Image (cartoon, rainbow over all chains, first blue to last red; front, side, top):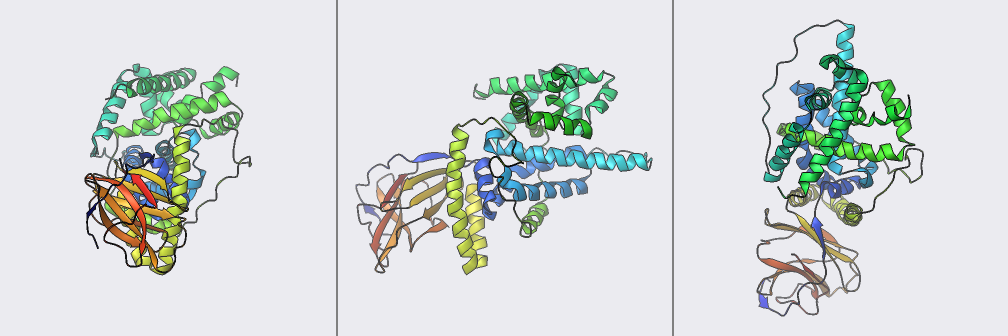
Length: 203
Length: 240
């Protein structure tokens, strides 16, 4: 029945248009839409898994926690509030919190039993840069990190990637507690400003 | 804790670097400090960018595990505005809110269709789900909406990269038994290509390429469909 015909179709009128974002997929997920959740999984799983594995190091635990995070996203999708930040940010916040909780409970258990076992060997990280925009963003973040002072950068990295508390960071860096608290904050402010300032320049 | 000291905790807080007792105290403060709430949101947006440095592909089996697991996980209901679990937060209405509202409209449409399909044929629905998800997941997927003459809405999600599109029809008026909805893709030369019939609301991946297609059309035709569209169309939506 596909008989092509030439017809005077008028040009379409005033469509509203926009890319399907993570937030859209999360809104769909909140209604129980498994297709949208599956699409969302494909978008965010590499960030979530990469972050969790960086913090936990242990591959099996990392898979376990990544699974917990994604199930949590499914369960609490309706609680996401777009007014408080992007969907990607919300999901990575959940991921970071869960990974850090796991590290600390393991740490507590290890301290109790006085285990001194060697740290899990450093894993070879396969960097995923599947799209050009992802790669560009990663480079931009790297450049902005390099613009921080040494103490700002180290404080932030030890907390974010290693799951250290600020007293642990202070201990590690031999600095005073108020100093580390302040460096974390002013370092993040500088990072925010740097990322915001370069965003408009069309990388 | 003195006031200025509390404010500097936004940094360690978004890095999850506060010991438990301090975190609990800070969260209590956060619920009453609009300034801190705004700063936390902004610094968090910056902090999560650190994850871009360590992105890594999860093992494929993990995806299957997660998808299987959610089948058994009940979703939380939304928090009712003003309820106890909803702290006072300054809201900014912008492009995102509008997008989210639009998405919510599509959400209702999409999930409704999927539910009915699942009732009829679970496997076919899962296949359709995967196909729809594959299009939605494309980074270049774009949505366009348009009203349908007589009531209802048509939404098209198209991805040039996947060379596919998904059509969602919702709230269409009921047609007499001897009439059917017919879906068309219109190319640059204004030639209409039939891409299927619909009895009523539906969510489906459109047959055929989207390359060179400039508009989606919906018409009312005699039962069985027509070789050429009967004008005027019930809906005509530009894809670009």
